[in-house]
Image (cartoon, rainbow, N blue to C red; front, side):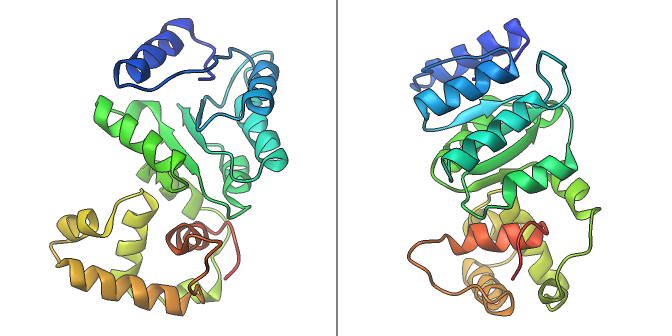
Length: 213
């Protein structure tokens, strides 16, 4: 748990422990965060963006450095700010196990814990506001232009980490309909069955403009 504000850091630690998770280390600065990530390689790291010594982007940079050393190291960014450039870099290795939540958007414990568990399992958990910021950046690939409006809606919800059943509930469609949409999306994006990759994660990364088709 990497957060420079003591009360917030301690509160999140207590929350995680109350739900049966073990917090193996905490950090309050960017350099300490990197040291802990490299030495402990946790099942998931919850990391703030702006941390000492300069309070700019040390936390996110530490997460990036750790994932370059250990690709796929699960990282959930929890911040008040969206750093578009570095957020894209965090997603760009296509290995999954990434999330980005805004502190102001977390309203209950289950929401936060669910995001942690999805990221720890190699999935994604993206705040809708973060997705909107990222999509305001460079144009996406021509492959994404092939998606229908409904397929884009499904993919946007997939980026938040929702299951097909949850997406079906949001869009008032059947599970089978969502299954057909996801299959069509994978085909249009050129994402095929791969024992070494999660197709849902790869589709989300393509949607966010982080990787090619």
